[in-house]
Figure 1 (cartoon, rainbow, N blue to C red):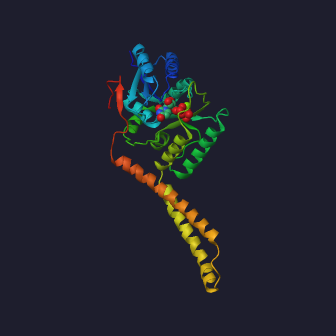
Figure 2: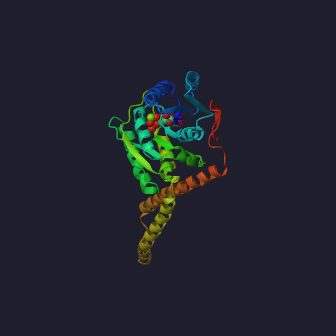
Figure 3: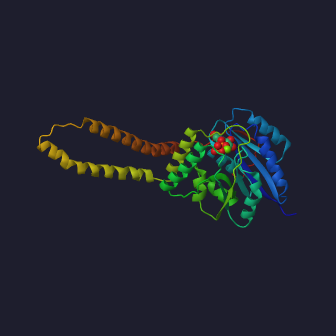
Length: 316
Ligand code: UDP
Ligand code: MG
């Protein structure tokens, strides 16, 4: 008998108790139509405050396919996916959200492309007119800014729904970033990549766990973990404004010599406020990079697993 190839499906879950049984079921149904592949579902409970973990444990007792990692607290979506990959044992790993927005019906297509020799099969979300304007708008801005500022180029709508070959997962396991930006990292590692676009479904149950604040943070992380361009921008802006101020100098001399009374209090205040703000932004940008170094040099573990039923990770 030839051994079946094993596919690991990694699902980060933050308070998704109602969605977990649905997606587990959907995956088992999908894999029932793919008899040549074994299935391993890894739920990563990311500091859930609902009964997600009980739900997963119950499921895992009734199915040999279902595994879980429980984080000791909320470490965030990206690290949850990373942990799932670290513990996965499949020949390929599929990462998808736990809210059914990533349609499991796409899986046969992902696997087909993988079998054709692509080591990374990633997906691009078609723009969904049903999404609230706020989400569509912020998402569009996000990709525009990210691509302008960073060295990896992402297609608008690049989603965290993808299949990675074992070789790529093993490379990803060597990353020890405590704020990984997986979309960028996956692009960055190279290999043969293929993109599939799909229509996102609506969230099955519950609410998005990404607030505007979390999205902004995610965007800043995306830019600052892939590029030092903002730092260069700071320097260029500095040159620009010193240049402009030199242009202003002759007028100052003229005003002094001709004995003009110094009026212009308003413009002075404007300038001070403007530059005050600008300096704060620049300091903030520099601060973000220093902050990243600070958290990275402490070499703390990136996530802490409180419990798991995966007892034989190949390389934990
Ligand atoms: N998620 C997580 N930890 C978090 C936030 C989100 O594991 O701190 C999971 C969440 O349960 C879901 C996936 O990440 O499976 C995507 O989150 P969500 O659906 O809220 O994001 P959106 O689809 O709105 O961008
Ligand atoms: Mg979602």
